[in-house]
Amino acid sequence: MTEATDHTADLIVSDLRTRGVRVVRLDPGAGPVRIEATLARGRWRDALGNEHRAIDLGEVMSVLWRWPTAPAGHPAIGDPARRAWAAREDAAGILGVLKSLRVRWINHPDLATAAASKPGQLVTAAECRLVVPDTIVTTSGNAVRRWARGRDVLFKAFHAQGADEDTMVVATRVDPAEVPEVLGAASLFQEIVPGTPVRLTMIGGTAFAVAITGTGDLDWRPVQHRLTYTPIEVPPDVMAGAREFMHRYRLEYGAFDFVARVDGGWTFLEINPTGMYGFVEIRSGLPITAAIGDRLCEPVRSATRHGVAVGR
Image (tube, rainbow, N blue to C red; front, top):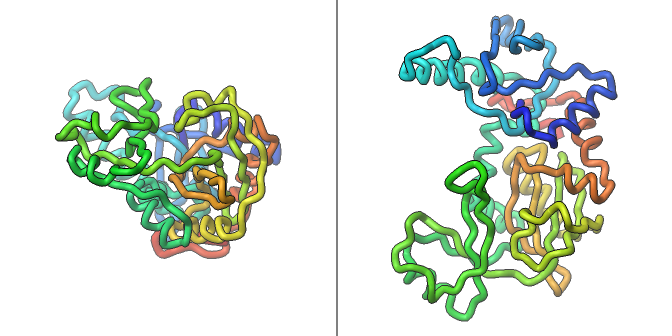
């Protein structure tokens, strides 16, 4: 389940098809989705698809949930209000049926939404004995100046996407003296941790870590195409903490960002439960796609009462 331009998903689809696994790729917002779901003995069966492809819900083994767009309502409905109502019904019905499937999810959207909260991530990471940077969330510039005294600090948005789809809000070093007295929105500031950026990709309990070099910028994402990604070992304490973090949020996949400090320890920055990884695999050679494919093909041994697979 993802949008057409999600090239990370392309890697996984290709891997699964090479294995002979039948894959149906859908995006609810790209056009009308066809559903004919019947409930029999507590399980959904029959068709889900679009004009090009469909699958029997009773045969679904796993769902890869990436970046699907929201249903937009049937294009034949001309009235905007009625079309908006139809879109909400599609979201409740089509996505409601899909989310209730007792299969392996990477990741279930409800769990991914919970894990995407940056304030929640920091608390959970600390509870998992990962080191987290000193942080303030505030609407007050005066509070920032008081908190930042003696610190080198950055501003980081809660959502990377800016005012439009083509704008990325990057992490930026700030001079506390220049922060306005009243901030226009709740804002997150953190103490800058010197060191080397690390991307840790977790699939189930399997870890793939790379050190990222080639830039002095605080936020390496805008220049990721020209950086070097060198595979590295994960310290045992970080591995234990990352696995516990994944378990607490019941995630099957997570793209963690850390800083490897000069003292050898790692500091947790954030996690993206639907983050990209293709650029890491292509530049490092780490078999991340194959690990995701293995996980999607692994039978679920148990499921929660909410319908989210936890078969670790």
